[in-house]
Length: 492
Image (spheres, one colour):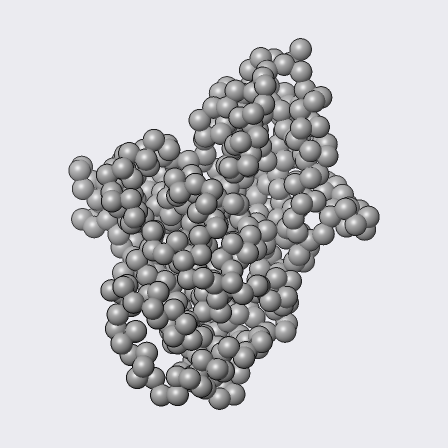
């Protein structure tokens, strides 16, 4: 008979904070069906399996590790009652709720509870639940970066100070990001995935490569320490900047470890705050990082549950184009636009790029072209090592594609080539010119921006933040030619 307190931990619940005590018996399940159902990035599949198997090896006899075709098959081999922390997907939550002998506990791995968000949301009008307001409440609730009753430094948000373009010499003088060393478990995982592909049981996108992200608690803590000491000081100023030769910039590479449950979010937040209070990093860098973790990450978690299952199907702009094959297959070499080619190559080669290329290169292009938001959300889920359904619902459906009609952001994140030129070095040596709307040198982002506005003029007419752009729309010389050129464009 299994210990009545055995804790079933999913593959994104791998840290010690998912257990009630250090010696608690654990159940870990590796389900082949998860990787058979969808074409994940090869490096994401590797990371998840590596993390799960490393956790099983760490726990030894404390863990019952079951490898099976499905979760249901695995559970049939387990005797005795189980407890499980609330899963991170709606499907998993419904599955666990319907199981006899399984007690579902409140979710863990987040700094704020569901009741905290619902109480906050109930005080709003229900249509505009803006992250900034939630973020301030989370700061107050956790006492993070606070001086008494007010924010440290007198301001809640230092985002306006954190929009510097990349250094003019195209380089940040930083050590390379933390990289773990692969071991025998990684070799075993790679052999397993290779064999599954050869048999046709699984299919992946992207390239295999050395594991770049933490798969253990020890590695994750090292990565956090390395970031705070070496990269956090310059994170703030350059968090929105992009460099073709440096996809890492000052970013932390911690999102995958957080979403696997290897790090607790408040652990990361406190480390950044402590570094600021000790004078090791400027406030704008500490606040910028805290806003990413305690603001956006928490907010996206709650939005996923608050808006319900139908949210992922929202399509306010009636965007119905299918993702083109070159994008779906990460065919970066077939793309001429240097920004999109570079970012797509990063996704292909490592399953990751930081938040601004995701939003303003990948998401911006999809928004302009009218790609189906649910299909794009699924692509982000599968192709990024830190991608999960709950992550992408708000980030893609709501923020990137404006498919919810503005329930969480005040305007679409659409921008032309001038923005990319200002915030990156991508436009250098590109075959397109960021200021050109027509002709062979027409930038697909610049022409695409005006095509997006023209196509959605009526739907966006009530958005006050876009009023100046919409007024200028009919003043664009050759607008019909711009629209026709972009509609006919097969690839950038």
